Each structure stands twice: as C-alpha cells, then as structure tokens.
Length: 164
Image 1 (cartoon, rainbow, N blue to C red):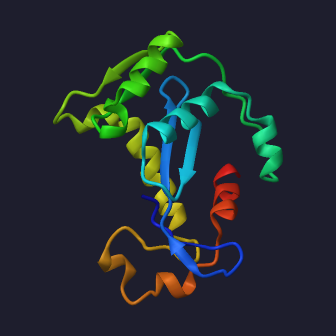
Image 2: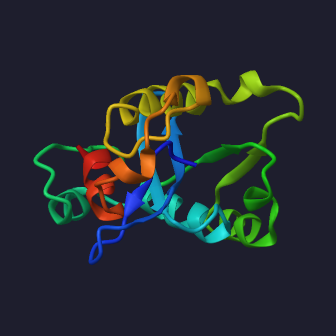
C-alpha cells in the first residue's frame, strides 16, 4: 500500500490509499514496470505489471505527460516473487508457462532475497512522504498531520508523478 491518500477526480474528496505492484530488473536495478490501483494486489495486477515490463513505454509516457525515456522492455526470462497469494495462483503460473517465463519463489523466512524491490519501494515512499496527503510510514512520523484533509492528488496525477 502506498503511503498516500488520493482524491476522486470529480469531487476531490479522499478515496483511499492506492496499491503498487512493481517489477525491478535485477541486472540494471531499473523499474521495469508497475501497476497502480485502488484494488488490492491480485493476479490481474501482477499480469498488468508484467505486461508493462514487456512493452515499450513510449505511449505510456506520452499519455501521462512525461518527457523522459524509459528504455527497458522486452521478453522476460525469469520472475522472482515472494509468497504472497497474488503470486501463488494458477493464473500467473499458466501465463508464465505459456510465455516461457521461469517463476521462482523467494524462500520462506528469507526477506533478504527481496532486497532489490524492498529498497526501491523504501526510497519511493520517502519521496511520497513529501506529497500532500501522505500517511507517512508510522504514527510517530505522522504526528498530528491530517492526511485526508491535505490529500490533493488523484490516482492519475499520482501515476504521472510516478512516471516522472
């Protein structure tokens, strides 16, 4: 869950915290793709994230007004995942088999195996904490900050911020 409350596009009222599914290329340490949604992580969000990994990002960046390049895309050889339920279903297993992608699960009780993605998420959340509507990562940091009252970004605006 992202440490940010987003607002509705029409009413500009708080609607909740988005969920982020992210894929990192371990060789380059680049974010290869992500999926942002108000829906909890699922096989669908994982599939959409992997589709973005494989596709060129030019059109995506244009749609979100990003003037930068995101040069990473192409076939996936292997996906390393943790043991969350969204990675354990038959849908991901079948899709990986169909596209020739090896699916490797992190050993249980070995959190250091996910260090690549955890580091990126930690760095990202530190930047999110500067945005209006942040929830911060703990109560001590938040103090008396009213996240809902200060929330100002829509999901689409936040996604554009991520793209930049």
